[in-house]
Length: 264
Image 1 (tube, rainbow, N blue to C red):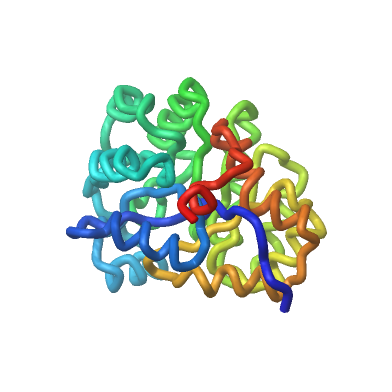
Image 2 (cartoon, rainbow, N blue to C red):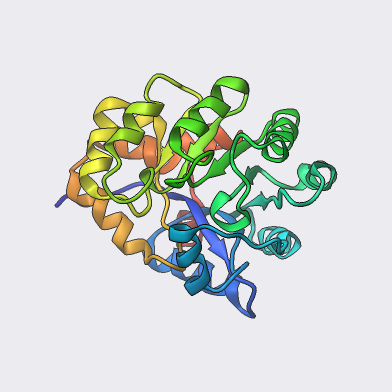
């Protein structure tokens, strides 16, 4: 297992609606050597219910606390990058009104139950195209919300970059890697997937199409870092996955001197 070096941006962390959540996230980032993180609201429903919805279906119509995410990012000195967690049960105009404060969009068929090719989801993607946002989502083994549906959405909106979360559906979704391979506006965020899938994605997609993520607080960042350390990546490939790809996608400056280095 090789040691990983260089700056790290976690492309998928959650901010749960409880006191001290932002401080806990920043402290964990310091502990694990993570310089920046894309954050999106979490805690819209109990995890027991979410896990059941993943298997049996169902949905909630609750709104995410996007303003709390925005406030946490504003107080982080640039370390937290806010994403807007959209509710397709609300008018897309709500997202349009707030889009300027955020760096990207998340839609979740698992939470809100609205398929990816539903007109409500497409209305949100159209706003993302206007705002220059990428779109993060997690696919399901469910009609309208699978990886093939995400690919169809990517074909319909070629100016938008989509991020397939959690290495596809389940832990060993080689099929997802093959489905997105021809579509260069779809990237893969790798939290949760087995290291063998990440290794396959590196071979078939290239390091320039992968994004490191953790799914904190549900997953400890060290677990995801260990997965990449076990793959023994070339330093240039790790730099792309852990840092450069995210900054290119977010259209943010990729500083040579990171926040953690400046504080040492």
